[in-house]
Amino acid sequence: MKFIKGHDRTQTYLFPVSLDQSIDPDNEVRLIDLFADSLSLQEFGFKTDFVDNGRPAYHPADLLKLYIYGYLNKIRSSRDLEKKCKQSIF
Image (tube, rainbow, N blue to C red):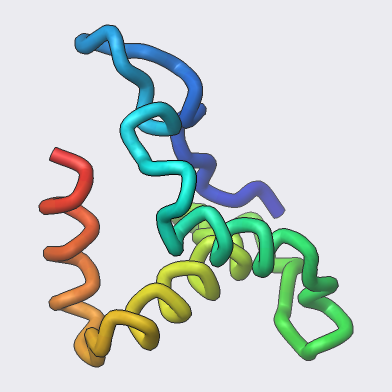
C-alpha cells in the first residue's frame, strides 16, 4: 500500500533555509529519526501492508518517531502532539 509521504526535508520552499537546515545538528529528533529508521518494524509486529481503500495511512515508522518524541518530551495526548508538530514547524 502507498503511505502518505512527507515533504523532502532538504527542499527549500518559501524561505532560503530548508527544514533539515533549521534543525540543530545535536537535536534529539535526529537521533529518533536514525533509531526508528534502523529498526525492522515487521519483526516487531508492525503491520506494513494495508488494503488500498480510502485515504492512505501514515507509515508506521513515522508514527513511531512521533510517539518516541512525545515520550521523551512528556507529551501524552495525541492532540498535544499534533499542536507541538504544528508549532515546531511554523
